Structure formats: C-alpha cells, structure tokens
Image (cartoon, rainbow, N blue to C red; front, top):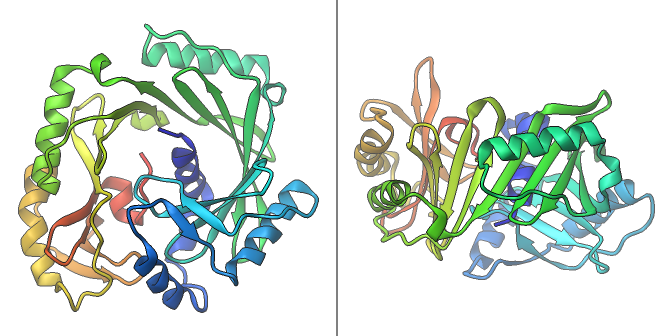
Length: 339
C-alpha cells in the first residue's frame, strides 16, 4: 500500500478541493467517457495527447527544466480516480484526476535533510503513539509533492514531503509559512496476522453488507489523519474498506472489479435509493429513504442529500445494481476517496 494515494487526497483536501465544484474543462466530459471505456482490470492508463503537454508544463515548473513524461500512466489510488504519470527517468511525476483531466500535483525526489530534526522527532513520537511495537527509522530519500492550480496553470504554495521507512510512510505539509505539523498523515503497514480478529470480522461483515463480497484481507495499513483520529485501510484483490480505529465503524467501501454506470438512464435515482437506503441505514445509521437524490455528472454517481446536512451518502452502481463504491463523511460530501 502506498501513501502517495493518501498524499494526493490530502493535497486535494487542503486547498484545491473547491475546484471540484467548478465547471468541467472543455472537452473533459467527452474525454472522461473515453477513459471510462478504456478502463479495465489493468492499472495502466493511456495519456490523452492533448493532456500530455499540460502535464509536461506542470512538471517543468516544478523541476526548472524540460522533463519528458511517459505516455502511459497508472492509477495511483485504490478507487482509481487519480492517475500518476512518471518521467522517463523516473525522478518526477504528475498526478491528474482521471475523469476530468484536472492536474492536482507534481512530485520529485529529494533528501531527508529537507526535514528538520525537531520535526523528525515529533513524527517518530507520533508513530510510536500509533503502534509502539514497531521500530521506526527514516530512509534517506524523500519525495517532495507540490500542489498545482489547474485553472491558473501554476504551482501552489502547498508542499508535501513524503518520508519513508520500513513498514511506514509519512506525509508532512508545508506552505510559504513553513512546515505545518497539523498537516501530516501517517501510514503504517501491517500483515494480516498482526491484525485483531475483531477488526477482521467487522470488516468482513461490513463489506458483505455493502458490496456483497466475501472479503479476505491481503493488505492493511493504519492511517493517521490528525484530529479525526486513526483509520484502518483494509483490502483484498477486489475490494477495500476504511474502518475507524477508535469506533470500529466502517465508513467507505470500494469494489475495483466492477464498472460503474455513466448515466442515470441506466439506473434511475429512485432505483439507486431503493438499493442504497437499506445499506446506508445498516452501516452508517443514516436514513436516506426520504432524502433527495442527485446525479453527479462529474463523478457519475448518486448523491443522497439531506437538508441542512448536505450530501451524507454517495454511491456508484454497476449495470446490475451492485455497489461499485459507497462513501460517507467528507468523501460523500466532496466526492474524494481520502482516508
């Protein structure tokens, strides 16, 4: 499991998320339809010829020189909403939203010297607080991420450093005012045999309810996200679930092998509510039976809206009305897939 997935989500949530609600760039609607038709079990994503020069322009700003990118990228997050495109030498990367073509960030390699000793010590203390039985030491190489304003076609002041070590990855946020300790995320990997049996049972039952899938964990990580506490990210070959460490509640579900419908003419809003309402009630204790249902033309999913609360549940379905993903909390409100 790779925390770059979490970092991209963090960058989006930390200042660029509002852009999602704006108009879709010209041609993106057609492009996203083409991309969705191309999507298969493979994580490989051919890069549109019109998008590639924009990606190279973003990376050039970051690197300070011309950088040639590969013409094939890979999905960089488990929900397959973000694509990573690497440079030919592997030292630089650009990230864009798969459906809209909107560029979110770029990254390149640097060293641990970029991070002060005091900040390193604080991170190590937090790691120990999350799970004291593991040993933590930083690798020398650090990855530096910079946010990108797609509309202005320029880098933002938001910088994130990715620090790594055996079984863990950390992202530490920064802007023009310096490092921000409240803006770091931590991902600690675990083997299935290290996980509590109660957690495994909770996850399996929740995934069965949400996705009608027999869940058998193959990868696991404990993720720290500040004031919201820690969450488990558990996955097998086809599915993934987020479980709050403190409450034991499952909050988000994803099935990678299913293909979501791209129009509400296949499954109406009424049909979507009939499918999702009992699941949301059982898993989240949220009653959406009388909620307003809206079709999101950007994400191609169904948003369940309650007055004065906003979108409380978001779901994508396949042509057979199986759940492709089911989201609550911030991900329901904004369409993201961050932990």
